[in-house]
Each structure stands twice: as C-alpha cells, then as structure tokens.
Amino acid sequence: MAKGYQRPSTLLDRPWHFCPGCNHGIAHRLVAEVVEEMGMVEKTVGVGSVGCGVFAYEYFNFDGIGPSHGRAPAVATGVKRVLPDHLVFTYQGDGDLAAIGTTEMVHSAVRGENITVIFVNNTLYGMTGGQMAPTTLTGQVTTTSPRGRGREQGFPFRVSEMLATLEGAAYVTRVALFNPAQVVRAKKAIRKAFEVQMQGLGFSLVEVLSACPTNWGLAPLEALKFVEEKMLPTYPLGEFKVPEGVKA
Amino acid sequence: MSEPILMKGNEAVAEAAIAAGCRYFFGYPITPQSEVLEQLARRLPEVGGAYVQAESEVSAINMVFGAASAGARVMTASSSPGISLMQEGISYIASAQLPAVLVNIMRGAPGLGGIHPSQADYFQSVKGGGHGDYRLVVLAPSSVQELIDHTVLAFELAEKYRTPVMVFGDAMMGQMMEPVVLPDTEPYPVHRPWATTGMKGGRGPNIVHTLYLPADKLEQHCQRLFAKYAEIERNEQRSVQYLTEDADIVVVAFGIMSRVARAAVEMAREHGIRAGLFRPVTLWPFPAAALREAASQARLVMAAEISMGQMVEDVRLAIQGRVPVTLFNRIGLVPNPDEIFERIRKEAREVQLVNG
Ligand SMILES: Cc1ncc(C[n+]2csc(CCOP(=O)(O)OP(=O)(O)O)c2C)c(N)n1
Image (cartoon, rainbow over all chains, first blue to last red; front, side, top):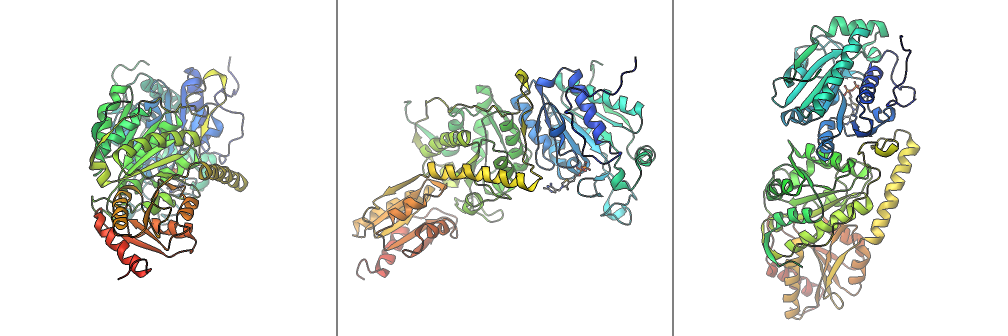
C-alpha cells in the first residue's frame, strides 16, 4: 500500500546542497514529480534563478536554463514564444522575483505570458546570507534590518494578492510546506498551474512559503512553526485567482 | 537578384533579419531605432514568427537569451541608452555562448544626450560594456545596403561561433533612404544540438548556464571562450582601403563617417595631397595588421569619428607609435567632407607635405 520514498525520474540522484531543514528541496521535488506525472519530461524547460535555487538545473532531469538575477520570467518568455507547446516554468526566490525582478514578473503577467512561476518566499535573501527582502515580515530581524524591519524599511510585499488584480494572470495561489497536508496541497497547486499553462490560459504563479532555518536562526522544526505562526498572518494561504472552467 | 528598392535604414535592418531567417524579435521603442521594431511587429507574424514588445531593454535582452537558448535565430535592436541597459544580458549571452544579433542605432550621448548620429558607443561595445572577460563581434556598415549585408553576416557569424554579434548603425543611417537589394540567398543553417528544446529522443538534459563556482572550471571556461575569440580574430578581420597604397596621410573612419572621409580624401587628391582612407569594417576584431600595413609609408594617420575619440585608441595600438596619430572629431552631426578636407590640408602643411 504505502509507497516508500521514491525518486522521480525527473530528479537526478544527487545530494542536495541545501541547509538542513530548508524547504527548497521539497519544492524542487514537487516540481519534478508533477513534470513526471504529466508526462512532460520531453517537453519541459525549467528556468532557474539566482539565489539558493541557482543549481536547479543540476537536480532536474530535463532541460534547464540558468538566467541572470531576476530575469527568469523574461528568459522564460523567450523560450515559450519559440516553443509554445512546451511546459516552461521559472523557479525564483523572493529577492529574485519580488525585488530585482519585479518588472519582469509583473509584465509577464500583464502580457498573460503562458508560463508558470514557482515563487519560493522565505522572507529574505538566503543565498547572500540572510539580508532583508521586500517580503521580510514587519519587525523581522535580518542582517540588514538588525533592529527589526520597521517603518523606514517599508512593508511586506504580497505578490500573489497584487498579481491577482491583473487580467493576464490566470492562476495565482499561495501554498506552504510546513506539514505533510500542506505539501500535498502545494503539489496540487503546481499541477494546476502547469495545466493552466498547457491549456494556454495565461500566466500562473504558485507562491510557496518556505522555511530558512539557517538565516532565521531557528532549528528546522522551529522554522516550520515560524512559517505557520509568523508568516501566515501576513501571507494567508489560498487561491487568489482561478480561471473559469479549469479542469481539476 | 531582386530589383533595387528604396528603403530606410531601420526598415532595411528588419527586412534583412527576416531574409536571414530570424523569426523572433524582442525590443523596446527608442528613437532613432523604432522603425526596426515597428517593421518587425508588422512583418514577423506574417512569416510565422513572433514580435514581443518588452517592458524594458533589460527584459528584451533576457528574452533574447531565452529564445536563443530554445534554438531560435533571434535579434534585438535599440539605441545607445537602451544598449546600456542590455550590458548585463550581453555578458550572460556571451558566457552562455548563445548566437544572437544586436543592433545599435547609436545616438548622441552621454546621458539622454540627443537623437543625433553618434559613434560614441565604441568603447562600450568594442571594449566590453558588460562585466567580465568576453568579446563582442562588432560590425560597422556604412550604407543602407551594408546595413542589410552586415545584418545577414551578423547572423552567420553568431551561428558559426555561438556568440553575440553587434551591428553598429547611427541616427543618420537608421533614418536615411537608399536604393538596396535584399538578399535572396538561403539563410545560414541553424544547427544547435545543445539548445534547450525539451529532452526529446532520449538525450540527457541540455543546460544553458553561466555559473562556474569552482575556480578551475571558471578558468577553463574563460580559456575556451578566448580560444574561440582568437579564432574569430584570425578569420574575421575585415577592412576596406581606398587610395592607401601611396598615401602620406591615412584617414581611418568607420560607418557613416567613412563615407564623408572618402569624399574628403578625393578632395585632398584633387589638391595634390596624397591622402587615403582605411575603413575598419569589423571594429572587433579590429583589423590592426591591415591598418599597420596600409599606413606603412604614411607620414600621418588621422582617426575621424563622431565621438570625443574612442576608435583612435585602437588606431594608436595598431600603429604602435610608428607615425603620429591625430584625431578629427565632431559631436552631434555628420560633418561635411570639406571640414575633414580642411583638416587634412592643415595637417599636410604641418607635416610639410605641401607648402604654405
Ligand atoms: C545583479 C545581481 N545583483 C545581486 C546579486 C547577488 N545575489 C545573488 S542571490 C541574491 C538573493 C537571492 O535571494 P532570494 O531570491 O530571496 O533567494 P533565496 O536565496 O532566498 O532562495 C542576490 C542578491 C546577483 N547575483 N546579481
């Protein structure tokens, strides 16, 4: 009955470089599983980003691109226009997507570009050592908000809520990975987003709330609790935009 | 061969791209380049391609990165400030070894500058522009016909060497009309087994990236890039000479300036001054050996350019101090031939080629 852990064929047999308790590995795995289950291995191009997900192409067993910091949605646009029947997704952190790459992300949605963005929100810049991001919570201490993010550092950026106002954004949802039920939900959301793309309905984005124990200074389990208790009030889960008549 | 037709430079670039098999264009409006994108917005859907108007030149160059990775022949065009915004992307394209054609219809600068003809982006594109060790092939056409021919050549070089190639125009060439003949030859073939087109046919993943964290891997990568650049330097230096064999004064000019300089050289000859023109057609690789040879009997070399003096540095490097190198330059306009001629005459007096 219950299957043990099996590596999908879309994930190469390599040890993760991620810190213990980091959720990037789970997010990678979910994407890989959905690509395999949809039978899209031969028609997928994954576009990584610059951040802790920078080595995405070293793990996925399908074609991949490493773009510059923040520009993944523009790169994915170029790929998708050339290969319109392929599954094209980006995998971006919150610094990559919600700071330096805000323009590319928003305008891909404005154009209704048929691509999917997997947006990993861990409230800070993981790879560069835990600096404040636009998504950092109010009061949250980071290496560049040492007294806690206050008025002078602005307010948390709710990307999904903002994108949901755009006509070209077809499917926008926020999920989390802090317990197995959430992981299952997250996988369903990724599947739905990919299906929306393959049906040509427009831009889709799955925001994944993700734990960063190292830069939060928390043990892995405490970090999961942080997502649930501290992130959810600012970043509520749910679907912000769903296209009419999407086949389940 | 088709009949000659009258065409504006910018439209000619667009039609040349289509003739060269380019079906994807990503760009952002800017004077004096906008007709390239207007023409392609109209034409590409007709020929089964796609035009995407990007939200900025930063996005446009990254769309080019994506389309080239996915195996497409692709181009973008802009003018000076927009090309500045593309520099990070150009570095990535060069590092990832992607074929792509970039057109710079240069305008007055720095800053917002103006919309006059200019050649002041020479340093930016010929010497680098983006970060790190890479080179950009830069072609310098001097007529609307050559804008066409060099656009076609740019796609060929980009494909052959897996590298970005830039075509330099300027506000005058982009806007002026001249009779041209469009090429009717077969486009250079696209063969990219490395492209990220999906893992069809049981091959392993194709990856396009530019990250080499281990120091030895980065060094190897740069060595590979520069072995390729050395090959380009060996094979692709191009230049045109006019009356240089016996020239006492060799004028060096590229692009639109070379046409004016040629007329000035003819005026000088009419006045008994042995002047000649050396015109670099490839700015990188710079035809240094050919220039040195062309100037071997000269008493003076004069670089003429629409900038405060940029190409003149490559001229000096080529001449290696053997004869004096001087600069004629104007900003914001293409000078009249007599202006250059007057300068040639003045220099001729100074090096005592003619009397008072
Ligand atoms: C143009 C540019 N600026 C800055 C950087 C440095 N940089 C690398 S990763 C990164 C932040 C990544 O953070 P995020 O996107 O949140 O992803 P995470 O590492 O947290 O998963 C930055 C600023 C860069 N590579 N390029």
